[in-house]
Image 1 (cartoon, rainbow, N blue to C red):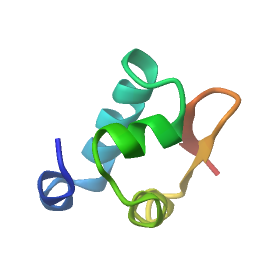
Image 2: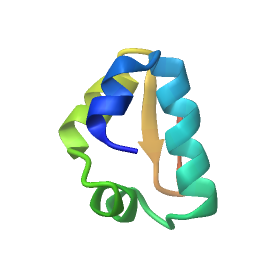
Image 3: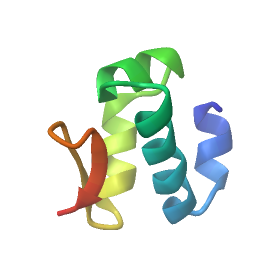
Length: 64
């Protein structure tokens, strides 16, 4: 999974993938960003497009 692949996907599909990775593999957004070499600003902006933001308490992107 890299940014190039994610850029071509529907934003809701990206949301699903990111939340799955957070649930199964990564215990924080920082770990996810580092492991997959993703830009945090890009991820946040992409999720904001559909009204989602990262919630560190639940370790997932949730509707704002």
